Image (cartoon, rainbow, N blue to C red; front, side, top):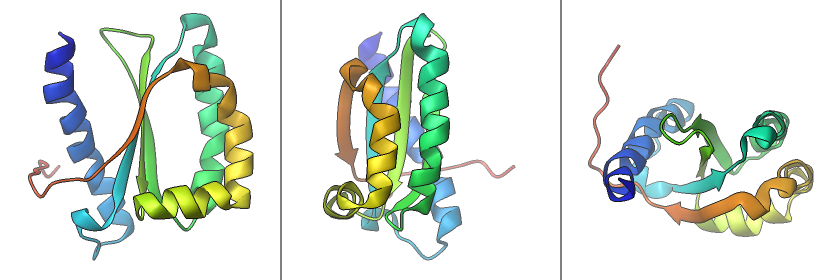
Amino acid sequence: MKTIYYLILLPALCFASIGQAQHNNKTMKTDQYSVEIIRYNIPEDQQASFEKAYSDAGKYLQASPYCLGYHIIHGEEEPTHYIVTIHWTSKEDHLNGFRKSSEFTGFFQLVQPFFSNIEEMKHYNLTPITWNKEK
């Protein structure tokens, strides 16, 4: 089941989230930014606190010139699983710009209590293979 999740769901999430990042900057090409995927396993009794922390931390991402957009999804089949997807102008801008900024300090203070629950935290590049149905 996990193999199916990684082969189907995770790429689909990246493809689905591209629309929001492109909406923010219509001329941006998919190979010009980086998608950070953070997978969490959050126990049920911590989920409200986790969601509140990221809701509050969002203002720091929104204030950063390096962040193009983000979203958080919650597992249906495995309700302790969360995936945070953050679109950065580049991996370098995330690591050397955002992480050295005042916005990072506020962001980190809010989400740091959940870092021991991280199962994966990596950067990905989108491929040109994508499709979204127009609504």
